[in-house]
Image 1 (tube, rainbow, N blue to C red):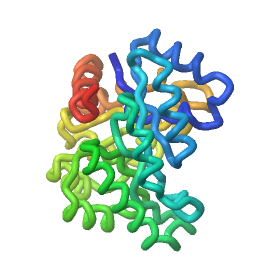
Image 2: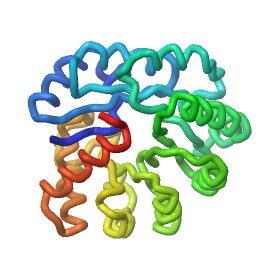
Image 3: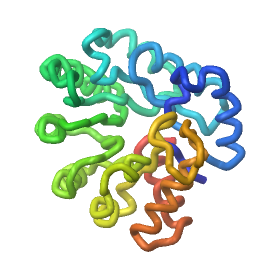
Image 4: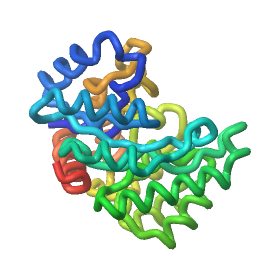
Amino acid sequence: MLIDTHAHLNFNDFRSDFDEVIKRSLAEDVWIINVGSNYETSKKAVEIAERYEKGIYAAIGLHPIHVKDENFNASKYRSLCQSDKIVAIGEIGLDYFKDYGLFKEKQKEVFLQQLNLAKELNLPVIFHCRKAHNDLLEILRENQTSGVIHCFTGTWKQAKEYLDMRFYLGINGIMYKFDLKEVIKKTPLDKILIETDCPYLTPLQAGVERNEPVFIKYIVQDIAKIKDIDFQKVAQTTSQNARNLFRI
């Protein structure tokens, strides 16, 4: 078994064939957590998850790039959590890339509101962080919770601080754009989660443009190569990591 802990089959890229993509994934024993980025995609993630008895789960949250156009309504998001398919709040966090950085204070305000919801519901958090690790670390030092730093792109020093706070690191196809060999090599395997972030960050080995959960095997292969360990060891340990964090 492999568990893709961060997919977006709830996005428009999959609107015409998400069922077929899921069937392919489950046939290859790949489980999926679909992650919301605003209320509509969060609602869609729940609806998709509820179509399947097992293997498909959902996370809900307001992504920092959307806080300019959408206010966080805790009661609306809380109502989605009535579903037993919800395993996390996310993806939430901070994004200072380009113009998004003009709304830093609003991002922080909404982020803290969602952290409070996660604490209230006793759910782990899927953190988004782009060009904002120092601010995220500062907030997390004062707001203890459990979760994963999705699509980690920071330094080993930053990674170590997250690990010291008992967070997991999410590794995906960003490893083909950033040099993360040191981080992957030094991070204990029992603190790594594997992700596709599909439809984005497609591994080159896939040979297609759109990413999907079955391509998670390439992430496992390359983690195994960097750490000089067996594929099955990575598969088994990261699956157990996902089960432990998300209680699935």
